[in-house]
Length: 318
Ligand code: DGY
Image (tube, rainbow, N blue to C red; front, top):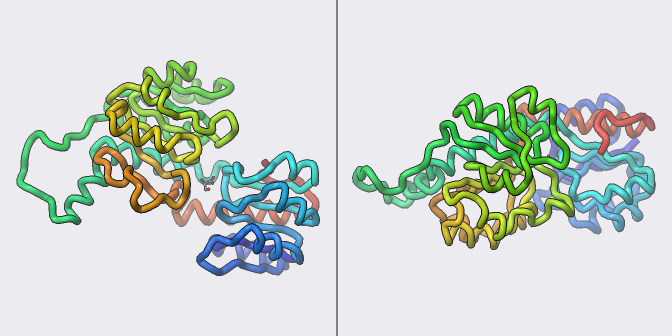
């Protein structure tokens, strides 16, 4: 069996695939593979490991109907036309669970960095602007006892909530399509409407999938209803907030700050005004980027591929 891998994954996953006598064809260029190149590369293989934002849309799927399985190296699957894959009977695997801790760490890191203007102040030192001690300028805000609003209480949202309760005794409210009773029992999180979430939270952390329902959900109207001292954190997908509206909201001080691990588009342009704002911290989509998590993701990818090639149910199927 032959498998095409459209980017670099951790060696542990590669080993599992090789030990199962799978021939690997690897995309080794640092450049993202194009849609045409991906179709061409998949003509002669039995399965695909999709790394990064490849579009697994109906054009791709119809040109690669022969694939026995597609394993995503991500938990998110907004790049996949799931209905088209279903109708062509191509199972799609993803990597939930293993990246929850690392991604929640990134959300927590951004929350803290924004609350103390850490990235901005770091840049000032680099630019030779560490000036004399003054007690009042550029003050941060504290998180102790504040209200954390989780938009999308799944595995990652729950981890973020646990960390914030442990570190700062934060009160946790959340909004989901359906109540998460396990989370309510585990940490005493309170379910609220979306309106209540945006009006009551001191920090809003986004942990939902990008869907037609959540696309552009955080827009100027929403930022206007948030507290003026609130922080907006997004480690899910850049498409969930409207970037121009976020810039406006920060400029007009409708909200206090923002921390983003995801932007729209990615990569973010180096001249984006968000990068020069005092109360903003931006990271280049590193949510799951730890050695431990990336190994576990690669292992899951390998297990999904092996199961799919055998015609078995995938350990984690979208
Ligand atoms: C995920 O797993 O969805 C991460 O955001 C990487 O895309």
